[in-house]
Image 1: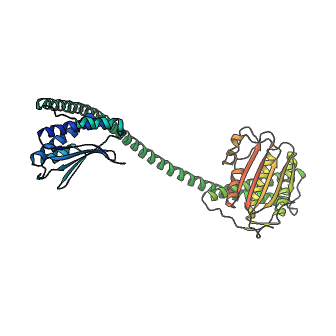
Image 2: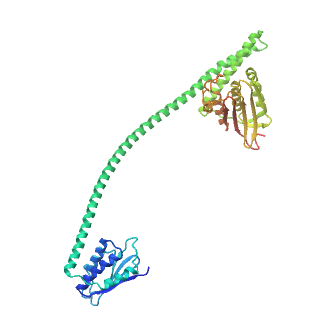
Image 3: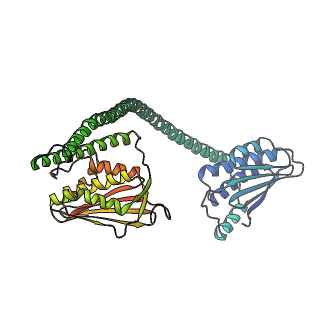
Length: 441
């Protein structure tokens, strides 16, 4: 921005000092400075002009606008000595004071957004300043007194504002302190509650762990205790049915057959309970081997054929897309499929239970679909909980079958999924991992 010279004149006597003060006030008004800054500029120039005049040399004064600031250069006259109190006053009242051996520069920055005076303002201003006639001493004193009164009023107003702000700040501080104390008390109380709750949860967690371990030990113990007499019952029934034993009537053979079947069912349930206990304790591990998938499904179809015939439901096994072999634990796979197929036959009143199997990249998928009663949406995940049975479904049982089957499926590295439509049927899907190019073909 190009500097604009507003006025030049010399201070050579007392009248020039007074004129300098008046000129400073007039220029401050013209360039948009507020009232307090107008007084500061006038006072600084008055002190500076008097200092330079009393030093013996006077001064040549230049007012100019330069880069958003009012710049006043005071060049010392010949024989002028060093400045004293004037510079100290300038430092207090102006934004910047620069002094060297020949000059003193005073700078007062214009307020943000102040418009630069145009020719229409600067022309008349220069004329007025050049014709400036110093006021008489009494009038100048009156002007200074008015400035002083205005300054004191401004100080008093600011003091009142400061007092009011201090009072508000004290009220705010008291409120903040009270809120802090309240929050601290609430937080301390909450922390005590959290600590107590954590201790209670830890205690209950320990109780649950103990209960779970006790349950696992109970199942394991009961399973072992039941297995011996059940095996005894099955063994004795088979001895009685042996052709080499004493002849039996047809009714006796029928009753012994029922005893054998019931004993086998009970033994299977005992084995499942024992496996569940082992699984919960992390002791049940698979023993992978090559499994002939079509043969395994054919054996299951034969095993469950009497149950299907008794229910009046068709049991269909489709192995057309089955892999020839699969590397997995045959016993666990058999138990999973037997439980799922038995569930389908148990809860299907008419129609069929169809088992299919297919090989996919990286996995083998077994699907058991029935045309039975279906399962309500709210119960579709709950049927995998131990001992849970859908209310009103009937069919008997212990509620362990699907829970046991899913646990085994996950031990084998797969999963057991269920989808059902109430009144239309249920589809259970067993997904097992398959080694590419390896255990399944």
